[in-house]
Image 1 (cartoon, rainbow, N blue to C red):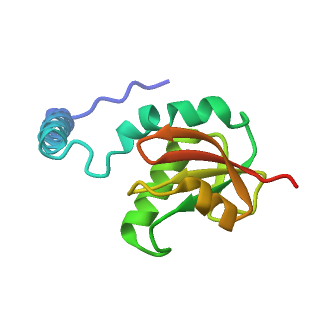
Image 2 (cartoon, rainbow, N blue to C red; image 1 turned 180 degrees about the vertical axis):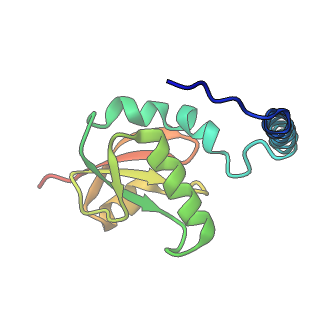
Length: 140
């Protein structure tokens, strides 16, 4: 088997390509770190785990959980809140309907959660504070 020898300019080209790739990687990492410090978490997703901790302890470990909020469907804030809640309570699946056995409430303003629950055929199981409420389908 014959040994292949590459010319010096080929080795030089490969070395330059590797060095430029490393430089680009370091530049990208620096820019990403700078952006992360400037706007660490604009939607507060990282805080949702702590906010929903008490609700996770009450909800079943798996399954489909209804979701109720005081924001209008389609609103960007409502979508961000739903995704933040979904992230916090995973692996449970949140559906934007209050007709499930278990329902998670995620509210922006304090209100009468018991009255809101009755309107939707639910009873408050636990008010977790900070706008988070766990409802359960009311039994007759």
